[in-house]
Amino acid sequence: MVQASIYFGYGSNLWKQQMRLRCPDSKYLGVARLNGYRWIINDRGYANVVGVSEADMTTIDYSYGLLYCLSPSDEARLDGNEGVPVAYTKEYLEVDFWESREGKPVDHSEKSEKVKMLVYISRDRTKPDKPKHEYIYRMNQGIVDAVASGVPQSYVDDVLRNYIPDKSDNKVVALAQKQALRFQDEN
Image: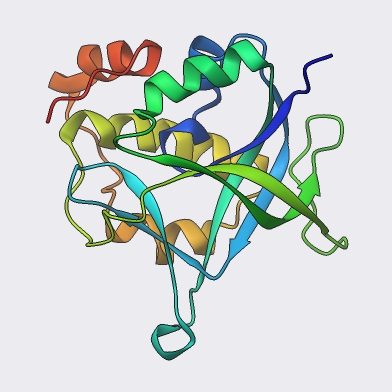
């Protein structure tokens, strides 16, 4: 029997509708925090998590994301959308996980569970840059879902909003929705 993967989505895959379109068998599980990794927009214009050395640590040396259970066919589709192995590689990293209960936001006062999760990461593209215009729309949709799921608003304000303005250009909505369904690299 082929086993499902538990996936840590930290970029536009915070948007649950995009995940339903890309990975129709996927199931939302909860919120996780990846410690020792800083969230950025890389030079391709998309999200990445960058390992932080002890000498480089700031007050925000972690990244939040949503966890999904992926069937093997969903994982294969996601590999295509994420550009594996060129744009990202697949790694299994330990995260702090808070399970969702009855559709309510996770409770961070509860003890988290340490679990290894599938993370799409680029070890080469670690320099911060600006997001693609259509990506801003998808990220803003994801931010709404992330906060509703229990990702702290302070994380959004202190990290994501450094890269993602809270308003999207309405001219890019059609492209953003197309990219949500099946990503095509514009680079």
